[in-house]
Image (tube, rainbow over all chains, first blue to last red; front, side, top):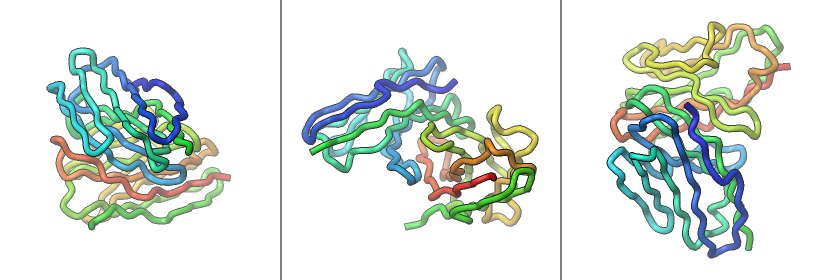
Length: 110
Length: 114
């Protein structure tokens, strides 16, 4: 039930773009995206509900393809502060089990 | 801004001992969760709790684990007889509603079993 993320790791130079993918074998109710810095708790970025919506703020956005049970996180014009591990989290039903993906380590270098 | 708090920040215990990890969720939240993260690995779901009972639990959450909301504010995770492999960061999270609600994570408790 654990969603699979790709790539596992990515290194970017400041200003470059990245896409992180999350794929589930289950029909999903929602997809959440979190960023975790080393030694800290995950920090919520955004939530997408079934319906294929796309959300975003500033230079980070995400989409959810309900038919394929896939979500993608788009980071544009990356900044050093974007470095961390990105996790998607998925729900099949509301409020119950919540599964984090395998994680994508993103490193932004000057 | 309200936040989820967890105590202690670091707990060291000997194998076979019982530990209780404490969390104070945000006051008007209705859904509560425990997760664990072994160093360098992914965040793993343990259990969700709603209306004073367990909603769902993962295969990790076996008989050695239990959760309680003893006084309407604290939310505790008890590990009865700790094993070396229980060493991990344990995160508590709470959520106002299940519908489209983000989870607010506490800072975590690092459990070290020796």
